[in-house]
Length: 453
Image (cartoon, rainbow, N blue to C red; front, side, top):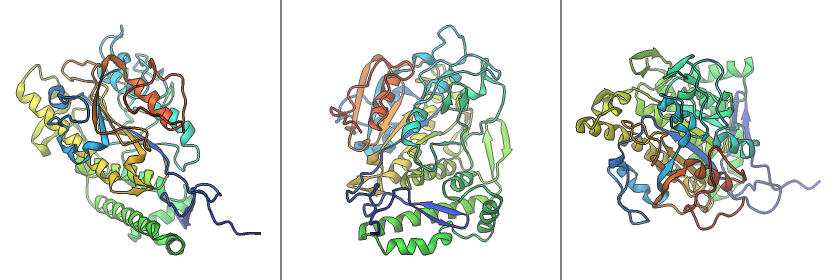
């Protein structure tokens, strides 16, 4: 029998307690043919709470020659890699007869476009989120169907906001109408899900020994890694070296974090959280690196990331803002409070810029990993003081594999559903839905050409 010269894109380097997926390699086609595969397209959705300081967020001009606003200024190195989308609305985050609870509704509606049933009990009901609709199709062959990340714990039962269940304020990803996808806040747990070989007693024992001895997960697949590097081209050898270096760097940072006594601060509640970075900035960035590795290795193609839960009252003393975020968002026109809100918004954007920079630095095919991503960043509230849900602060980063013209500020007519954007993104990953949430059609203006996958 003739030996196959190609292998599945799902190739893993396997060892005791380890299973390391390969990044996209041009030398290894995705199917058993002589035709090299194209890099896959990925989707990610990032949520920030409490809206933004809109005057400091929205660029004044439209089109490609707009100037970045003060809050968006940290994104200047990636000016051509994202779109600013204004005018988009989530009507189902409005009361519509349900009274208070805008924070809960803004979070629940963010990726679903569906109004949550108002309840503080177990009878929650919402709708499927766009990430899960996509994961049903593009996540079936991956190790992780989807990856849910966050910096705030999400296991508090009961009501959280004006009679709405905490499930609505702490989850943006929903597998079904009644089932939220719980987010993971511990970077070590995420790492082991991505690269551990399994969950048997033996696997856990090997993982514990590896961590105790401070050995890299790559030590357990070293022979296979060296063999593979000898069989691929020069560009792919360089790519593998960069990939393995990134894994080792993440492991080093995990070890540093785990040797420190750390605490997770959530408003006035301080709870021990072993393995969680004590710095909020480090926490966001370490989880961002997990998302990057997951995309780079094709462990998953769909991810969500909540920088904080809806209505978060986290303080930002480390940037000179000792007050709680939610408290400040009700600024009642106070200019000093508005300036502090803008500082918080800019801090979040700095973390987003870190993510884009890392994605842009990774070569993939004829472009970069960022070129093959579609990353939505934003909030379900526009102005935190008004609690309004029109003209939402939304960014779309990445080129979707060449299907999006980035580097522009696009303004849409008032009341254009945000769900229209999600329909357009689903098209770009080969998921052809007729509607999503309260959508009224596809969103124009992303690109004149939308090739079917």
